[in-house]
Every structure is written in structure tokens, then in C-alpha cells.
Image (tube, rainbow, N blue to C red; front, top):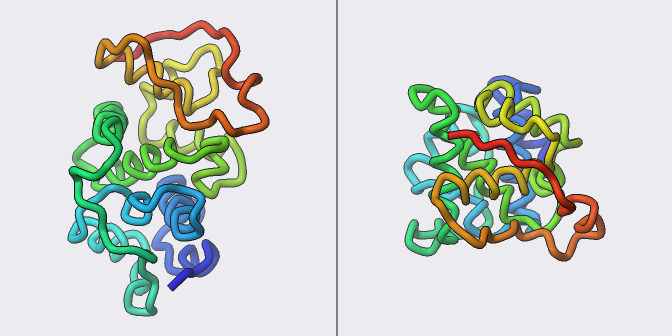
Length: 190
């Protein structure tokens, strides 16, 4: 059942809260086909997905909200997905389940072909910044040159994993590719 963001937001336990907005936005984008199929489940195992949905959007499942596709096995996730999610989790408070879920929403959003905020179904880059400030502050503070978030995350991931050359995020079809992928100074966070 393809439900809109507003309908899922109507079930939000914390409307307007950065993680809630990111989760609802990514799920809406994924169900609308703007993100890969695995993002409909945030790359989570099915039991954890339903736990997240009930915790963050109580009553949504009972009302019929569900991903459009079957869950994707962890082995079928893009190879860098677990590393991206773990990088976010390491920058947050892993004792809070919302941190893990927000990390998976961010990692899922990185696989869209447009700006991260757009692929996450958010209203602008400031929404991504608010999420990072609230849940992943060390990463937020490390981006002192105001690099575009998706590019910044990939640079941080490559630094963490000592990968060279560093793969670029999936944005090559975007009209703003040249503006986002110009020369920038990278500050490393670990």
C-alpha cells in the first residue's frame, strides 16, 4: 500500500523530531521508487523494522501502512551500506534505538540519485543538518568546509576503511553534480 509521507507522519510519536522526519521521509521516498527497494525496509531485518515502525509510528501498521516490497536479505544490500550505517552509529549513542534507525535512514538516503535531503524526502539540507546535530554530532562538527553531506559521508567512510580510490555517491545523474563535487578540503573524523 503506497501511503504518503503525511499519512505516516500522522502516526508519528514525535512529529517534527529529526529522526522521525528522516524515517518517514526515507520510507515515503523508497515506497515511491526514488530510492532502491532495500530502503523500503531501511536495510533492517524484518523484526527490527516492525519494532521501529511501532515505536516511532504507533498504529501505522494496524492502519495498513507497510513497505511495497518484501524485505531484502542483508547479503543483498549494497556492499558499502553496512559500513555507512556503522559509521553513523559510531558517531551517535548506540544505546538509543532511534540512533540505529536514523543511521539506517541516512545510509538508505545515500543511495538515491539526487541531493541527500531530496532522496530522504526532507524539505532541505537543513533537515539533514538537524538530524546530524541531534544524533551524530561528531560527524556534523567534522564538516567544517560545508561539503555536501552525501559526498562528505563517502569521504569519511573511505578514510575509515582506507579505501583509495574513494567511490563517489550515486549522484552522477543530478543537474547539480558539478557544484557538489568540486574541489573541497576534507577534515577527517574517526
